[in-house]
Length: 430
Image 1 (cartoon, rainbow, N blue to C red):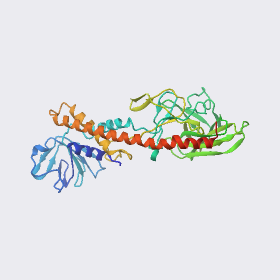
Image 2: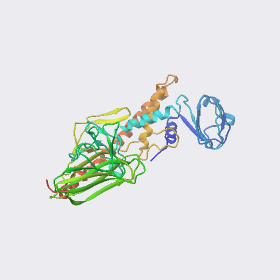
Image 3: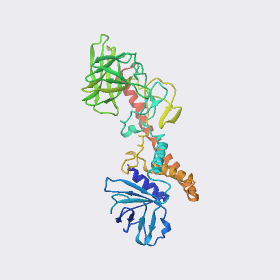
Image 4: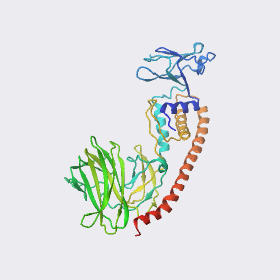
């Protein structure tokens, strides 16, 4: 299920005994009263119980701001908490959190600890990715996996028929990448900060390349595309041609109207025995489109050779997998990555979240952070909690990985046996 940042923080805080929650039955700028039946405040309490704690107030009015005040004063007889520094627009009905370890600031420290926990899980929570010729995998532009394809292995699916497939080689002053032709409009180079470049195809423009492909076989074209603004669509088209470039078979087209985030386009086509080439066309309808990393590869042989990464690196907050130098397309994913949130109380952490695993990961981060703080003199309780939650995290991590390990086995049974035979029959024998 999905949880907001506030729900995550309160859940972990409650399980660790660090946070109490409630709703105000009365409030002024510097006081909050909670006399409800489920109030965490009690008239029989000792003032020492909450004196010096922190309070986080979620104000409903005044734009829904969140305020944190430390070193509160507790008056048990009236179930009132008082602080210095008035909170604007506070009123009856506002929710609050009492933080028993005020040094652990909910607006400054908790977001970092949640992010650290998410990064820990993210090491085995990757989306579908594409192998480039820089000996590592780019993880940026894959957002289209759903259902059982959330679980993937890494496979070599054969050579790319297109030349300069990552648009990395442009002749100085050229109108298009090497081996590509401008069929219409204007094409320009968009420098990418990563390891490949993007081609921007202007309004109603066409960028194409004829790949030499001998039939019979079936090929698939893949490209990432996104509209810049104002256009109608971006399209990938394949058509089969003879040696004289006349069309032998009708084309297959995939298009998108997505703006900003690159969307993956796929098209497949049969290459007949009498055919000699496949034309790959990247088309911008109406407005400009960005295209990157076009690919054309053979489906007929059913080739899916396993590739094993060498070392995963978390570099500059980005995960990179260094691998043997295969100059082919590949794909892999274990699970969809979790979103690193901001502490606005509303941001959804993930729609595919394993709640128990995330709770344990954050709890471990919180406990370790508290143990390292010199302001906390007695860390004995946290030391015991660290052992308990480390064990919980290891157990939940094993369960999580066991599910991941089982799912590909079922998927591979169909992908690497039956579908291989089908591809050979469809594409013809080689």
